[in-house]
Image 1: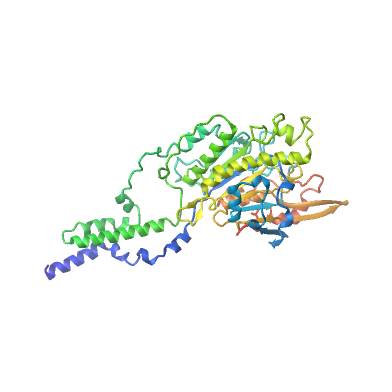
Image 2: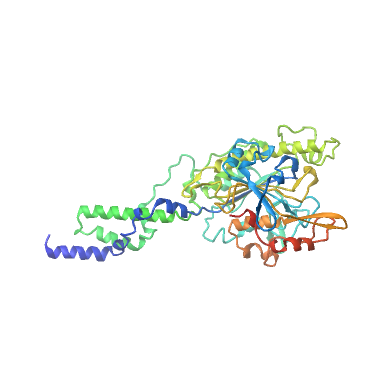
Length: 507
């Protein structure tokens, strides 16, 4: 090779490769994998499981177990994994394993301050008041706010994504959206086959080969787009030796791998065809199979990026063949409300409710939590811990489930939303008391704060959820417990916190 040709070759390479040469210092070896993994952000997901009636106080953790002061208002907490079983209703191997690993939190002490006729938190209701065909209010439920959120679901969201999965397991009453000046009920899937067909129509059939990626298009769609044409020009030059072409290919491959690492820092909705379509379910019409299939499909949909929000309202008005319950009375009237002549004792009613609740939580543990309790790639956490799965009840903690108490709610939360919650805590929120005419009244944080916590966890901005409430808070704030002196005392104790998330449980 002449000196003249050598100079031309070097000049041609430097001019043609340009930005390729500039990128040479940015090699993968200079960016430790651990640092990249720690920067990964998983997508937001949340699942709600609502149960009718109240949680028997005798069947759950005593608030006296929380002894460590947290916050400034008198809340207390304790490490949940060290407290033993949460409840006989949560006595399931998967639940116990999650508790021992610090994957569960329990919060106690939220009041519905506006409505005391017994149906105060058909849980997703935006007002903390029952919002259904009996008592519509001008508030959408939080699932429909998430569904309409341009922050959670921007305009680039694929049409194959189902923004909310609503499993109608018999009692889906709490999903409502605002249409003009009206509240409109949003139904759930009528059966698991319809749910399957809608959720997974875009996925690859089982056994079908996944198309091989086009490496050229991969390169063109990355930062290498700016140097790709130069790369092609240099590589195709007759003045470049075969060894240099090999080195150039290797260099570009390293840059492509580096780009992949950068792309993995932010996990977005996965491309649907990266998941294999689950086998079409066969439903025999039973309530047992309805729950099993719906929960499994919802878990797979969230894992594949088909949706970020799911909810299930479990039926509470029939026996449905659940083992351990009497067969000659209805669950709702004959047991919970004891109005069919059975004359069950409070202890029996509590026991029946635990049987009913445990059966449903077992279904959740086996068919939902277990599927998501595997590591989500690139996040160093499980899918389950990167999201929230929340078990909620229609009423609060009380001596009898049939009383529909709207006081002292106790949500159970699986996962921490990637560290948004502290996790592994039993937190008893502050209670303030006052005496009026020799009668003692108790005041707790409004249930609205819990709903705001969920919205904030999903990164829904205030402008999107407070627009129905004059730009502040979520839901309505009025009244107080039966016989109280209206909202004045709540405002005196907790007014500054009405429109904020529950800080005591946040990281």
